[in-house]
Length: 207
Image (cartoon, rainbow, N blue to C red; front, side):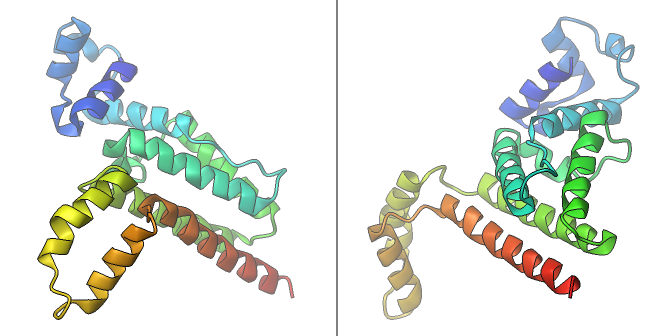
């Protein structure tokens, strides 16, 4: 049932998901679903837990930056497959086991690396805010890859820009497209800046 609900949300968005619609997809009455979940909120809890289960959990035995980088990249990829989940990842008040295991792994990785409880909390919030924000921005872009961006820039954006009125925007669009700019690369750029800043804080706290 949860897998079917996940597929429905992936294909048509969360607004298409209702107990009645899910029942039809499963060939069962909506009321029969309540034998498995108490209400739609419990259904969403289970769906979000499936999403958390797909995200690579950091391993505390490895370098903390490499572990958190791998976790962030995985989370971004997972949220690209399940964009409806972005707004729900931090909203569940009854998190499932995969959700809790993932959060425990993140906390363990940071604490064993030498972060204090407060610093680990700051790092966790900062990284999650960056991941979710970037994923949300990507989900709402009017293009899906660098080639589509290049076509849209030449056919739609640049014709709207006057070089005299918007010289820097024109310069940026022209130069970046000539260089084959891919906005997806900016995720790692920003992520590494955050990780480097957190490492400086971690080291300074030891002095």
